Length: 323
Ligand code: ADP
Ligand code: MG
Image 1 (spheres, rainbow, N blue to C red):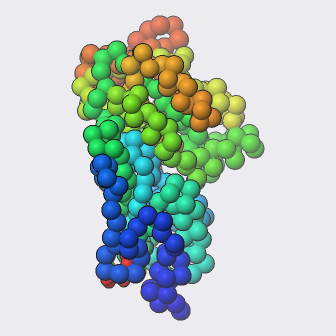
Image 2: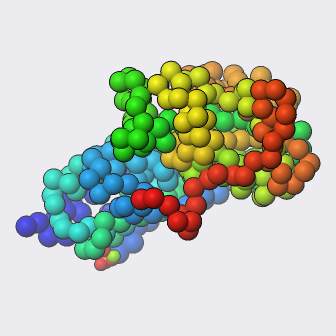
Image 3: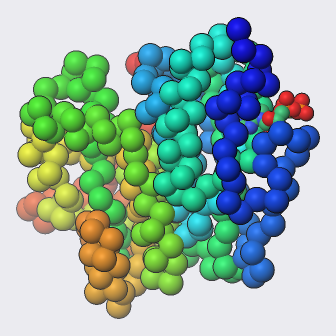
């Protein structure tokens, strides 16, 4: 059986490109470029809570890093370095090889050096700390949105939740829709290029990990504004085309987690610019509403023009839920 050190050497050591000292010593050494501020975030994935223990290890490796990359994208920061702490029930080398392949694929895709970590025996648990760079003072926080700003979302929120429901046998999708939604769940594509280009466009931004309305509530709270969402503006047609019924599609779009799209506010004067940026990245962005001066109030205007108060339906890990 390979030792812990063999495993680390074989699978978690790669050629770093912008690091002074990577895996193998007591600590790694790296330097942010001059004028850059470090953006740091950490996220943990726990078997049974965030993924099924039998998830394909390569997909899981990708997603473990991708969800962390997404947090930096949401700040307008460039992901650069990561630490990986894994707790594994047994040293199954095939599993580790697959996991490392997915993780390093994602690292290469987004220019991240894996510079260290920790490997221990225990229940399956994956924790990443990621470091990124942003020109000092230019990060986009959740707090800068103003009443009157537009509210935008990137890509297609809702697909991951439909993919999960389909995997659990709770929902039937078209064959192509099923593939698309499961891919969104298992191989999320963090919107790094969009986040970087929105630095001087967005007044506030976050990534949608727990559901659009629930995450929007965080932005409203931090910015001290309210929002009116236009039901007719929501990008629901592509979810219907995947085979979801209207109710499931709407719920997935508004409260499904795990899509890692960017939700951002921007002044109305920046509409053309936001569309041009997204167009240049071959990515859709949709203007779904407007921010108001009613702090914390979330309203949805239905197709008849009636305003309905909305509870944010975000996923809350501390609320009881079906596993
Ligand atoms: P120490 O006992 O000195 O903390 P470790 O045995 O924990 O050293 O780790 C040895 C080296 O391997 C360190 O550079 C550490 O950062 C790295 N490392 C351990 N586990 C991982 C992992 N899962 N991914 C990447 N690097 C790792
Ligand atoms: Mg250690």
